[in-house]
Image (cartoon, rainbow, N blue to C red; front, side, top):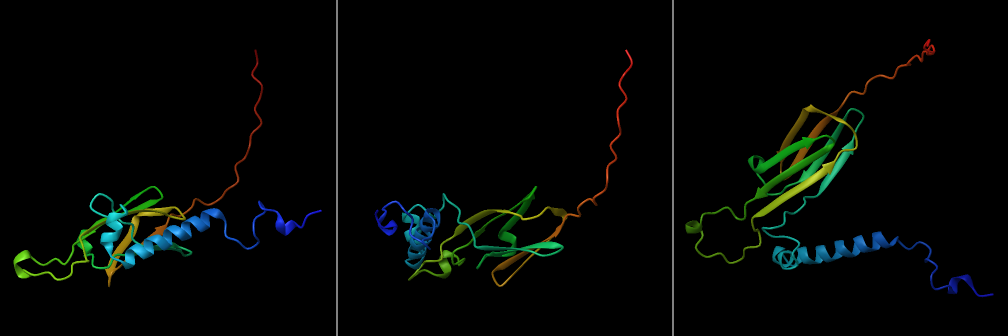
Length: 167
């Protein structure tokens, strides 16, 4: 009998699933690209004018509402477009680069803050009232508060016995 630890196809205990390992590796590549600047992301085809970026989010469900926090540093409220369709909240917009007119800064020494398009569809964990949504931005954080839809109360439904039809 062979030792079970020597089996080549047996998964190693406590090893992350393959999908988690792949996601971790992709996150590592993207973090490395971010640390070298957005131009590296453009070179890899992960960012640029043709592809919007996806801002980081938190989705928090409370007893009576769902709160979505979206990181949008350097984005003014007027540049943000929010919409809701069914159970999906969508945020879109743009962030301007340095925002200075060309004649105001004739010599740009470093320009890493490029104009950026962003878009993200966010599935909500509960049904919400589309008429009771508040959104506000402060210090680069967009906070969207969505009141949960009131569920119909449960009730008992009587079942009647049908009478056979006479021929």
